[in-house]
Length: 181
Image (cartoon, rainbow, N blue to C red; front, side):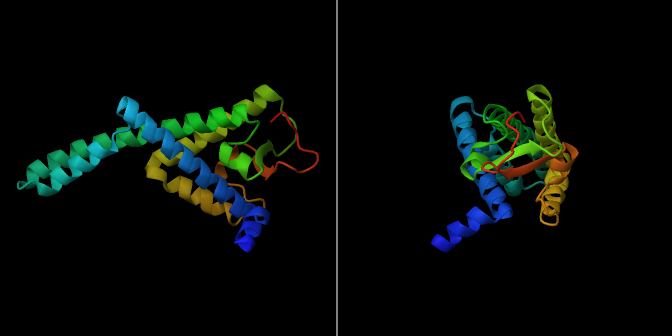
């Protein structure tokens, strides 16, 4: 067990992936609470419509049900992405360039080219999160997947949206970090 923890603590890609998993779990809890309180995003209704389409005897009726189910899925998917976007933007701004996952893994987003000031840095953090949202929404995440896979080839583990926003993820304990992202 200690060997696994040392690997997580030393490998930046592993730490970044672990931070993502922590954030994913946090967003899943938020979405569950939101569904319990407000009834959205309504993925159970999407599953019920899918089952109804599978059980439909008439192919034209199944096609009509499937069309409605896809519209319901797109609405629930967009609501999920918007919750993720709000979680990420608020976390990054309130925790100085970290989400709770990044904070636990001692990671932080910083500008590649030095101090941008709080306002400009905050705008670039929001731009990064918006690009991530856009990549997830367009084509149901395929550009996002390519961007994340690119991080495994990049020596600094930067994704495509990190590069566009001119940000990099660093260890919070590194000397010389700029506090005003």
